[in-house]
Image (cartoon, rainbow, N blue to C red):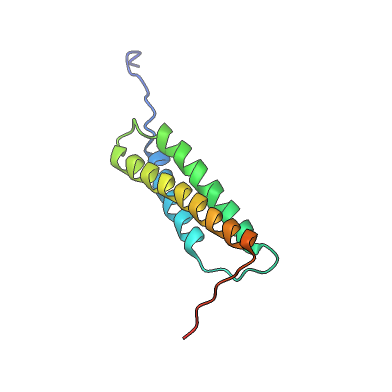
Length: 105
């Protein structure tokens, strides 16, 4: 047996998982949900969870052979986190004014 062989772990699975979680997080955020008893807030919590875990996986997978996938996952997760903040700000601003705007043809 050769004792000079080093076993290195490639973190390409983390990079791919980051990309997939970033996509799933944005898709779950953009699904139109009927607001029944704050159900939309619960969906956004799942999206937030996907984005945070995807961001962590992307940072851990940045030094893998799938570096581009990790970078794309990080970008998607950061964009998803920004969307969560913007949509929640708009939602709470709308609910605090008491004026709900509806658009009809």
